[in-house]
Image (cartoon, rainbow, N blue to C red; front, side):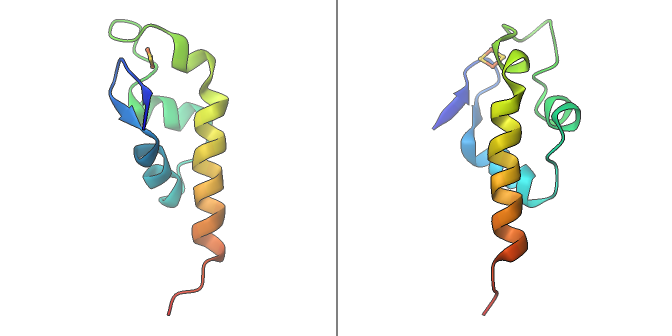
Length: 68
Ligand code: FES
């Protein structure tokens, strides 16, 4: 599912970053490029907390998952 039309970012992309430990708003924004005023509408940077929530959720899952 796309969560950013301007950059073509999918929820899975944010989850992947979360698994890698990228969960802070500033780092997520710069890594995903949603802080670029020239190529973004500005909607996602205003709602970056949603990205953080997704990334943090995935980070927590990966941290506590048991590997077989
Ligand atoms: S929809 Fe994400 S920056 Fe425009």
